[in-house]
Image (cartoon, rainbow, N blue to C red; front, top):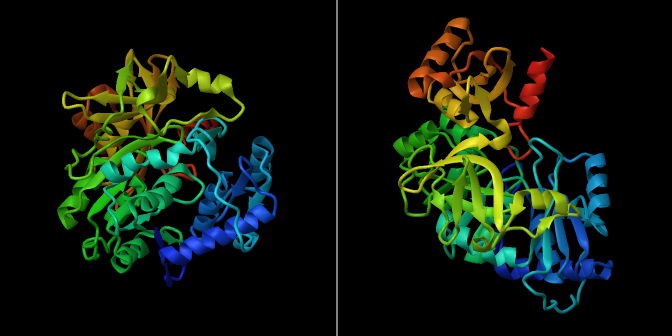
Length: 454
């Protein structure tokens, strides 16, 4: 494995395999010397940097359990996670990573030994700690090869922030398993800068959030950007809208392929490498993964998913609510068409029940985003005396579009024409941005709470 470190100013540092291995060994020696041993939990709150990558590899080498956390966590958040996990050490800044010589021999550990503790994003409730086994690392070969399409010698750029399962899987493990080079860029997202950096860094495999793909596509620099290096482009974390897929394909000939997974499950489904995406679809279950759709909910056969977690940390009750009789209930609503493709309709808790109709917010949001005046949208249910609930939509307009009552009416009409008429938003407001978690997922509960205050 190799790495290309890009700092906030754009300066690059290439790290070869030999140097990366040496740094990993020295960090393992330093951590061991500070008392970290097999099974110990170590909290890692480091940004997209060489130190993050070295720390994660060193903890793996020692047989410790890494607890990656987002940089934006507050002191109280960190204290809570240390207390809940029993972490013996925290790595909060690069200087916290110790280096020494003479690392201890790597322990021989079973695939079922714990290795990663990943906290969920907590879109509706509090974050829960999902504990993964060591076998999780090698099991990610399936999504690395079949979904991401990473090959030996590739340059892989996953833009996800450290602290989440997506960066673990796609920034570190994908490159590690494929014998590729990972790109770690420390800067914050800016569409124009991202497009320029893609041309400079020249990744073979690009993994971004749907929001990042969407905002890049809407940027004035998009048409002239040099994206010629990108062979594989994948997205995950939220719904990928059809208009964004079409724009990347039409302008640059790049097929952005959607994927689906959870912190607890790892990758479950996606548009496989070599396939052309059907815009709006999540793709099909990954090879060998067994799924079925029960009352609209995506359910996974646990025995067919090698990346499924051990369980929630110290919360067997919560684990048992979702893992029943060998079936993992994702809580996500999907439709499966005759070709086996999955189409996302939202979270089970987000289903809108209006006049006897059950409406997935994803259906409404997709219809709204297909209008050229709309950049982003989020749909929720509002209490209504006559209908039980009505559909409400928060809408972020595309550059140049001006909010007005007339535009709101046009958008309602557009939704009626784009999908079943009963799904149109009877309530609609224009907003500057949507509330999101640090992983980019829309916080519909926050929208509902804000509407309740009005």
